[in-house]
Image (cartoon, rainbow, N blue to C red):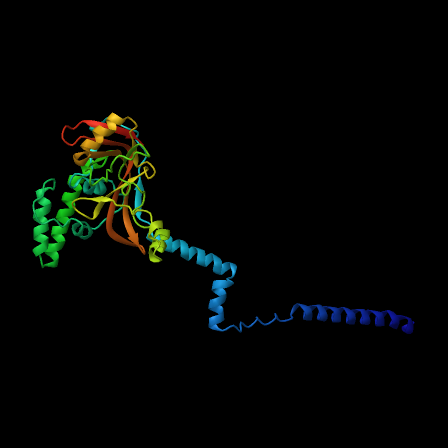
Length: 319
């Protein structure tokens, strides 16, 4: 009987041993060490070359972000305004008059500028028609001031005056620019196009050379360089007047020969009036830093030629 009992016991011991071995094997498999990381044997020069010519997805994303950051750093500060439609001519403020662009900019900008920054752009030292006399008085004091606290106090005083005199222009929408024929580049009658070319440089929709223009200029391809934006400026000179929306509409068509003769005769002393609305207020930036140039951009609605002696509107064209 003892012999019969020993066989099952032996089988049990054998089964237990096999089970233990299986667990040991399984446990051993689970504890295998991870493979060693692959060693990057590239030189620093090779790594830089790969980043340029064979970048990883992560490097591509980083490079794209860096490119966009450089582009964004050169974008101007800007606030845009909607089209208010047209209005009676009497509603249009003459932006070409002294200090009007200055007051429009300071009334409508959507960012803060320090008193020191404003003072640097407003350095007027003598009385000037159209300029609040307090501005030139403070300008003279700032010119001679040597005490840092005195300068700071004067700059703050001037900034407060600028806010005061600019506020009435906050809601101004419609503007015009009245320019002598030579300033507006009113050219002789073009018999082929049957009209008067006008303000081609002013109406290019550019504030500076494009990248393509710069490359053409660099390699001497001057004929391929389109006109630079010849924006207007008055007092103070850091405040510019630009035009938009009329880059391809610089010909005032006049097919009537008698009218064309009349305009041609009056052209040397004529005035060109450009009507529009304030499309945007901008300040140039470079590498993320504010530059001194500020812009009031006018979207053109109408251009007319006016007899400089009689004030008669000789021709008007809607844009």
